Amino acid sequence: MTIEWRYTVEQDLGILSVAGYLGPEAVRRFTGAVGWVVARGSGPVILDLGDLRNWSAEGQVAITDAARRLAEAGRRLELAAIPADGSLVPAGEGPDIPVHCDLTAALAVHVRPGGPDENTGPQQEWRTDGWKVE
Image: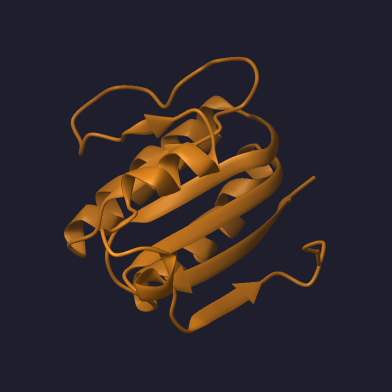
């Protein structure tokens, strides 16, 4: 089984949403999604794991690698809604990865003063073919 992903850019904030199981067989696809993110947008990236059923040790290492890759590009990775088992990305030699309870909480950290009218702008979105359209 693999993952599906969607990447949305709103001004200087990226949201990479991942669904499925981030196991060894999905790491390559996840790494490709991160490459897509690095090439598009700017500013922090929230990795929304609200639709992720679970992750393996390899998946957690892939997230740590993504944080390093984004840091090299001058961007920060934050996690939202980690899988229900409560496990976290392994600590180690790398950038700090803030963890938020859900996407709403993660977005609240990035709301700028001035109200929603000043913070909304053109939105771009890319996704895998299997991503459910809402």
